[in-house]
Length: 233
Image (cartoon, rainbow, N blue to C red; front, side, top):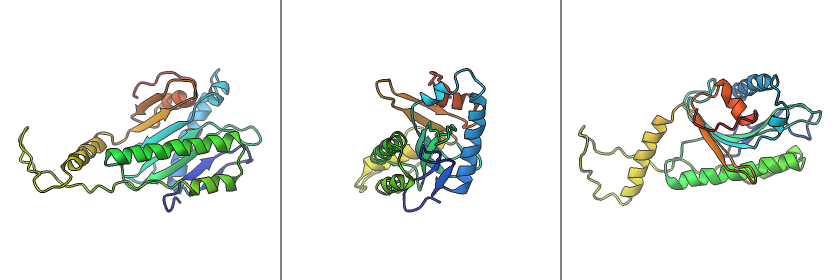
């Protein structure tokens, strides 16, 4: 299980001969592994395997509630998915992930979450490229806890059903943050069931897109099959 804001991980490392998992909810691991295993099995039948898989970038992701069937309702997850291979040459990605206690509610929280994802991405890359042992990966993750999220309390705005109406924000010291929180709440509702993906390979343009279903067949091909179509799914 994930605990104390420290990301867990699942998958293969070059120093290991099989799967390993630390600090991840079994329901998440089961649903995530089903999705990856089915998608990778399909990719392995294609002509681009395994070159396209090995050449794929790492992907930073945000799973909104409802994006991953099989996990408890309301859960959101963030992390990194990176192509990997174990010591005996079997292909399976490394996932470093954390269940979010709340969705980011302010611009500062979005930035903090993004900064955390960048650091986790760098950690995953170092673990794979430098053949880290499990203890080294664990020690590095312990130094990178998830930043606080959901600290801005949602305050209902006065509403009388009119399309346009003045808002009485008198006496509220942070009216701008209040409005931002309301906008974030509306965005959270619109984004239910979506997954967001972003890759930043060296010397290449950034790639980012949103997908409406994690189990859409083209999604794994877009991540690991060499597809360059990064329009929203």
